[in-house]
Length: 209
Length: 209
Image 1 (cartoon, rainbow over the protein chains, first blue to last red):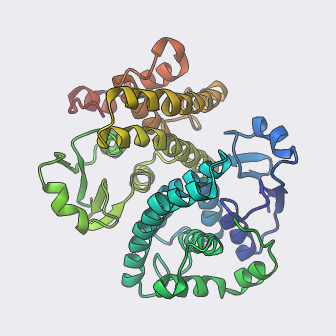
Image 2 (tube, helix red, strand yellow):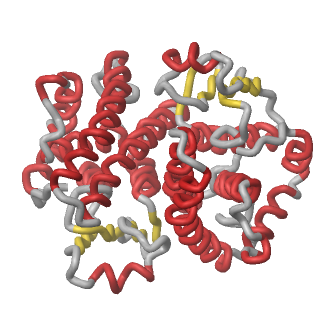
């Protein structure tokens, strides 16, 4: 078994799907969590491959970019899709999520730039909400056609994990209305009911993002 | 051999790496090019999986999202990286390109929204140029460590194709200074010297994007 270390901040965010994959596969890993502002990241940043976190170290071999990390682990642990076609759809859903995240990042940037709560609220309404709605239409369309209740094929893939974690984050920011999204709620319940995930979700650090 | 059809606009953009992969593998495909504004896309949009192009059809099975399409074809044709670790790095570079493309999209959005050339120029200088420079630092760092001159391992991958096409687009917009980027120029020459790619690049439609 290789020695795995995931370096990320003490939030779920872009690091959580990898953590879930480790717990799901019951594979030990070092869950190295940096606290924003304590200097750890400032010292480490220049030493990472792309100056970004998360970074996954596999016996010292470093992989940057969350989607690449998630796909790498999903392939090792059997959650990347069963056929080349399932893998392509798993990838496509994750890429669509990545496109949607651009709107979330804009809100984060506005907050970090010191814009007022009112201004940030306007950006949420003008940019994030329409992007979220368009994204939810796509995910709902996929779930409508699904026989298994999962997004791709007949079992869990990294696409389900990424989408469910995204819903959880939106929910924590009061940007998810469960009563309007029964299919997404059902997906979340299905994923969080998987014993190894359920166990981790119950004990993981409860962070806003 | 499956029947392949790539639906995209009459630009290189997000569709060109897939076209290059087909030419490289000498695999026939329908290169279906829509002209922006002639109504074809408007009719087709709602029928595509995510309301977006490109879409790859494989015997009628549709795959959306360019990176998912490129990875699918790269795997079929042998340009996705030779080991799981090479594949992860190929993915990471493509994801980093995708992050950089957000800045390019912002410029496109500003143009489409009818902003003046002066205003668009300001966005290019304040957003795109710093993002491009940061992106080039990362790609240069990878090339400095490369023994083969390719971005990943000892041969061509989809990462090289995506990066080289991105350079070509920046160059056509006078946003690439060859004399400042000898390593990127060398990569471009190396990729465009591959006979099947060279042949295609010489005859392909010459578009700005």
